[in-house]
Image: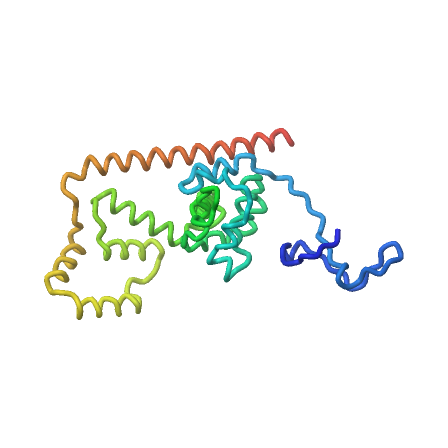
Length: 255
């Protein structure tokens, strides 16, 4: 069928003819652009449940597609292809293959939370974007992002010691993301710290780098936090495994 709003359709789904005559009528020009015929058959019936299991995606079912999230989105203003409303629609429809077409930009959410404040249904769109990015990583569709590496390093240190020691966090983050430790911005930051901070504070920071500070009597709290993390991880794995079982069953029936 011919379309008017080309900006709403992906370029690869458009077909334009310079010269076209239909039933003796010349429709060249404005009316010669068509949407290619395409059938989506590989639905993931548990996609919404999978996203809802991950932190931030719990309220994806509330969305009524008003578009407030995309309209207020900081990233969408720079990149119109970044469209939270559309991705939430795909998630709820189970259109996994369509969602994967944007897998390389979904993680670009900057967590400004403008969408969350604008949402009239408390969907928490920013959380859904984060949950979707983590889902892509857990399913092996994208490599683990730097932000996920940082979250893991940060969480591990809190659970283990009950404190955060910045230099230790940065060192481990750089190691996991295979970045060099001595970066120009860090060298400049250290120079300014040395020139501006009291000697006593610098000494304490240096000692904390060598010996990780710990919160006293932290063992019980640490064990409780780790138990909760393990429970949530197991719950998420079960949801993802269920989706794989459903997909396998569908393939067996089709065969």
